[in-house]
Image (cartoon, rainbow, N blue to C red; front, side, top):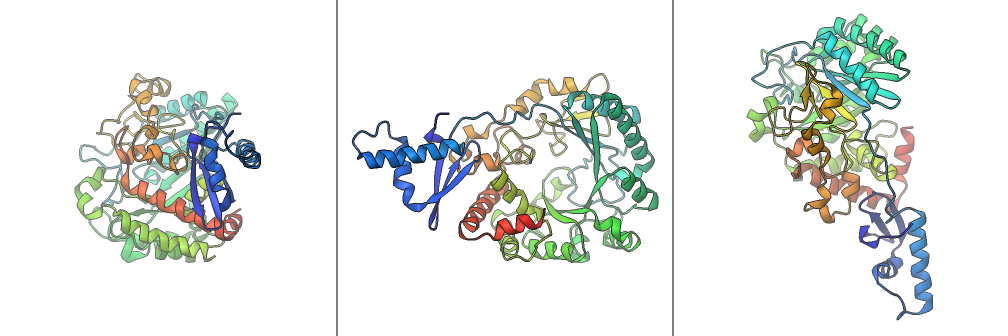
Length: 448
């Protein structure tokens, strides 16, 4: 393999020098005194320098090539579908002020069962070995009998095709009962729970149709089904109102005994369009909130508890990009992910603005998942390459960030500025911490 020094970026980290391949995300940590010799790697010829210098430069070249840093080695293609989002209904018993999934032009409807079944069957045909189906809404537990039929028929279809299938879902869990909990456990349905924090925080925006807060409904479900509810990971929407309270939020859900805590950053679509001025994130304030959270993680406060606004960056740094389809240059939208809305519309990703320029790949009525993936719009979405555009074109963290979320950016060549600032901050702090201690390695180990 041939070394391409133009892929390399150097970042001093105290006594060490971080050498990052900005195209693959692979990196090496070397002694800081190696920097002048590393810079000679880009020289056309080393004849004018002493033999011992040439030997040292050649040793560094071999070290980088052996570590696959700075070499053009094909990575995973991510060209096979493996994840299908089914929007079972766009109805919800809550009316969260920021809901990205509610458009004023929509009317409450439920996905046709045969449409859902066809989508699963087609997705299984397209996937290599295993399909992950995400049950979404609206609120999926409002149509629980439909959920059971979809899961049972999906499992049967997977067996018939010789494939594996897994189900998960996202819910406000306010409709949880014994039947739902029992079926979910029997069929290994993993639920994510949408709630923003203690009552004063949650009830500011997660409200019912009458305007009252929803936290009491969650508290009642936790009281009645404590083990089941605590087995769920929490997803909180972060807006201008709670962006500097990340540490308090993580502590709250850890102390409640929840399985993990993650964030979803505010997106000004759906109901959020009308509140963008009030709820839009501020990159500096979000960064301050994240730094306080990171310091607590680094200090050992969250050992054994997954704080995903930190671990998603840490995992990408330690393992390299790929496993998180939202944090890689070739994102999942229209590639290894498709979403089917309650009306049968096929989207590249459920976070894409349905009334924006990237909305609507096709429709299950008269179409298919395969035809949607082959549509010109899907090809355009997959063509996105932020490495051609500033500031990504020279960013050391490009491979680990992926150029920010396409859906939040809004168009092929657009950047999501708050996520860009957040990624630069996170990878800088993580790399600096790893150069000085094993605290983050110990934390990652505590989660296994």
